[in-house]
Each structure stands twice: as structure tokens, then as C-alpha cells.
Length: 170
Image (tube, rainbow, N blue to C red; front, side, top):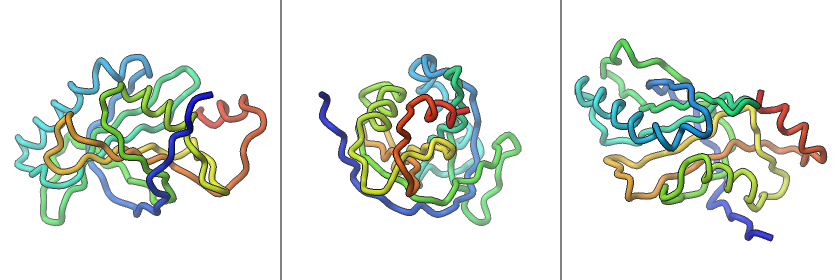
């Protein structure tokens, strides 16, 4: 039996107005396109004179049974900053999240798989598959630094029938 992954914290994240790009990816494609998506996003922020001296957000949302999901590269725009026309707003949903800091040496699907399937469940919490999963990247992040992964939680019961949990991902 594999060792359970301990979450670093259970915390309440506030609602934030994020802006970014959305790509529809399959779980198998994310590793191939991850660096390119972030490169294009950072390039766009640079062209718009938006400083990257704040956290950047990766948002995984709307995972379907067919393995496709929305992957957002996003940033919180400060008051007074002009939002480029091609950046779409995406609200960061307030709620309870379990967080784990990991180095992204492993492809994202494997990290999320490990975190969602092998985590040591804090008492009374279960994964909330209906809410987005977040990645928080520190200012001026590079791929050699750690990322904070945030898994949505809610107080509930463990689904005895695993087939029901797959229904939550549609």
C-alpha cells in the first residue's frame, strides 16, 4: 500500500477576480502543453506591462469523464491596471481547500492524481470535485521552485461507491 500524502494545511481561500487564458486539454496533453501555455501567458503579461511580482494561478476546472478539462493560466489584476481585451475573467471560488506544496518535477496529472487519490483525509472532509483545483505560483516563479496545490474540500461523507465520484466530474 502506498504511503498517504499529508496535506500541509486546510485553509479558507477568499474569492478573487482572476484574469487569464483558458485552454481545453485532455489529461494526456497537459504535460506536452504546460510550458507553452505559461510561456504565452507570461509573454502576454509582459506586452501589456503587467508585472509578475505577484502570485500566478493555474486553474483546473470542469474535468469530464472523457478526460478533458479547462486549464487556466491566470493572474489577479490590481486596482488601476488595465486588463488586456484578450484576457477573460474567471472568479476564484472562495472555499475550503487542502493545500500541499510540491515541486513540479512530475507532470501535473500525476501530481493531481497522487494528491486526490492518496491524500490523508483531514477528519470530516472530502474532495469537492465540482470546484476548481488551484495552483499558486510565487512571484517570479521558475520551474525549479515549489508550487502550492489547492484541492477543494467540503465537510461530507466518503462515497462508498466510487462510480458515484466519477459522476461528480461531469
